[in-house]
Length: 483
View 1 (tube, rainbow, N blue to C red):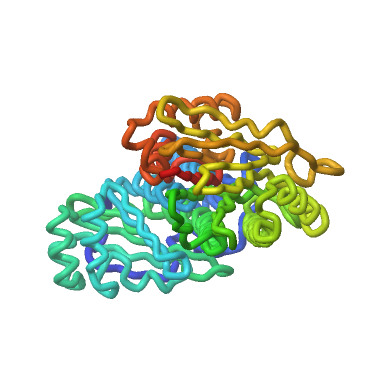
View 2: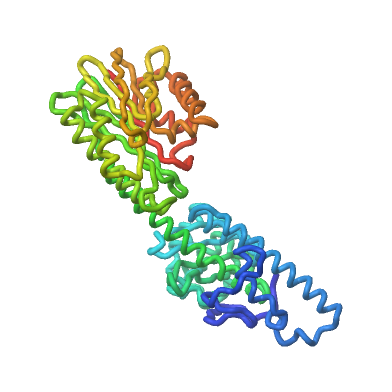
């Protein structure tokens, strides 16, 4: 794992002999896969082995060729793993794991710059270990001089963290506490995106990676940097969209005599779908309550994750229109959804929506509702949980003229009405229908004290279906209990 090289701190801005500096012009594809294109520069054997290439015997050359093929295969495998990573955290973890394998290290830490949301991910380090390393001043830590570099081949090598005079006292203290003997770090960045962050790998004992290992890692980072740049850009877009969506949803729920409300909104951790879910609860001038839950679908001007901000903005427009229609004619759910359908066709022709609208009279415990292609609400009573069938109806914006009958019900004191979006049901079963049935059973089987509390029931249903971080679809849950 080690070579006879001078130990201590070494910071260099030049690539190793026979390598291209990070950020050089992309190589032509070798025809194996997109990930293999970065490996093309190592194909000329004299450039890879240096001037000694011609001085070896046939047997020695065969051994070196075998080693070269092994390195090529290893790089190809690791770049393919990174290319298949989904999401920023998965990409950062892949870089750490592959770098550790290529260097022969056991632990690592990767950090992104503030422009990349300041993310830090560790390998073989728990939360306290990462926190301890983050207390080390940057100028004396594992990323000294690297966070401002754009991946130009510069690197930092500290072969002995205990004895190197360049190591600051805090870094030496943390290294002893965590059992770190040496570290090797590289900047991450591209000429187009600038500095993205840096990655460091740690050895348990004083050590120095061989030139061959360093060369392999430099080659790997040439491929990893633009991949991470794309993941960071997608993560920033996702965070901005999530902030927009949450800003468009209610910041509080109405407080009325005779009812209690609770809601949950969960955004997936991976790339978002083309739809966006909403919920709303509006106290009307006559003391009644309007409830709505729905989803907007359609790619608008674009498609895929890039269209998520457009879907969130469309959700905000639809929710605002629903509020206006609720104030004007909230006691007639069919008319409210009919007006919304006309607006959707006029102003959002590339989109469709599903929705449930309910008009609630708290004093009478009476609910009038209508649905447009949406999952049926669930009424949780003292003895059971059953669907409130809103009759079969098409989503808004699909037919030339939307029409569906309304449904009325009178609840008992203690009953709970549950409105939800498709994302929650799909987490409960292999199909939408099966998921809805499983969700109803989960609500029915909840402990009695949970079923009497809308907030606890929402938390129970989310936990039973995978928690806040699970799933790949938006989901919304709105619960109303009659007191």
